[in-house]
Length: 413
Image (cartoon, rainbow, N blue to C red; front, side, top):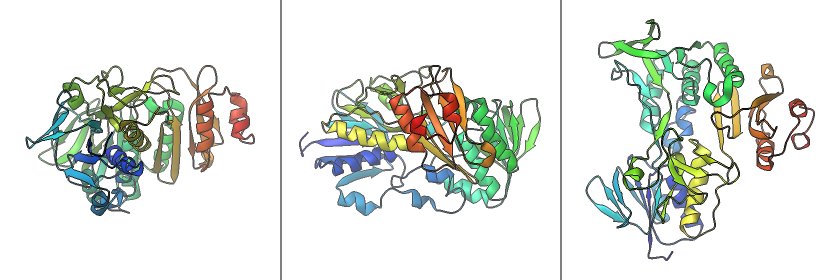
């Protein structure tokens, strides 16, 4: 590419901003246009469900850079602007004000949006979702009154919202249709360890129970669950997952995976879509992972950073093969956890625990049928995640008994 060419990034997200930053760090001096629907400067999302929700930080603390940084790096910000169409033949992006922006290379980093509960009473005052800075601030302010909180969904967002509510003195009930916390992502055994953590902190857990509707006259007063029982509530946090914003790409004729196939914009390991010159990064991309051997879509912070940087390098002609191992972390009460790896849905595995969960510090590993490590996590065992990554990357077959023995160093298992 030449200095006179323009790269347009749709999505002023972590992935989009990381791509813009990487372009400049790699020495590319052409035009960069960063388009975002929100009016806030690009920010990270993890603090929104952690320090911000605890009332320890303001949402502004999650911003990646101040406005002066974008000016100094000659990155054109178009905030409060929604991309409504991509014309790949004309190489243009249409915005909601009717204007068009031409591009030489395009990065789609449109992220995800929360899934909404389609049940009676879903529009009552007091029902919250947690995805944006504004939503985080609204929920943080609401927690200050110490309301009776019902959290719908025992996934990562739901559990972090429950943890913050309890730490701020709220009465908390969690409603989850599966048999335990995190069952679909961690499995029953490890999920129950997280359920126990919340029970120990006074959270009322209602598993095998769905939400039939919300009750109240304008303002929320209760949550009607399976069987007809009504849980009193002043505030609800709904955390039932997200869906990637692929509609713009699909309308442009770019290859998109079906929901049955895991959703996301399909790309190769270089993050280029089915249309030459158009790339994808962040929550929205489903790419062919060269190490794991299958396509993957990851909805976590580290992937936004990694894929944003990788896409930027690919767009300016560098040889890119995005093989970063998926990673995420959580903080709940006094528990700090890091996880690396991927266990595809439907995969047969066994879980090996290393250390005693009752001690509050342990590791867990998910092993494939041939005993190579698919994924692993540590709880309050800092410095261990690099060893977990090494085992995943080498695909070494391990002895489960030795893996469980904390007296044996991880590289020697």
